Image 1 (cartoon, one colour):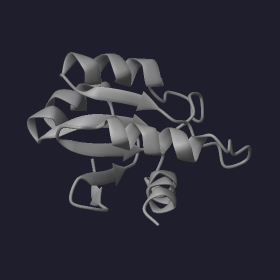
Image 2 (cartoon, helix red, strand yellow):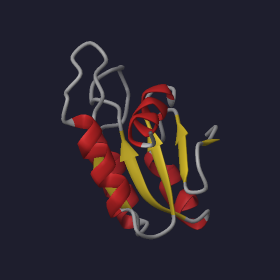
Image 3 (cartoon, rainbow, N blue to C red):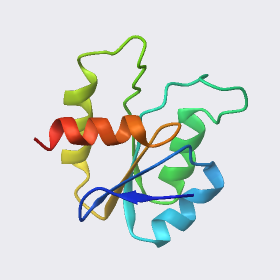
Image 4 (cartoon, rainbow, N blue to C red):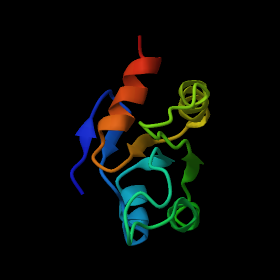
Length: 110
């Protein structure tokens, strides 16, 4: 997993796997935000699969999908809400490459 740090607490990356959640929790992550819509690619783990593993590792999980071909105006406030609720530890937002997650962070960091 290739993490990019955007702030003191916020990191982004491409698709994560369920078996990586315990390692992320051990690294101090307290929140995972999925910005990738389910079903983008064959074999992609669902948000529910990642959520179950994240919560089992003691982390909060938020699903804020960002579909570039059909953007939802609610996703920016939803992303901001997820970041606000992340009161402990570092925050990891992920999508396919980390680009959409970076764009959402930029939108709320202005």
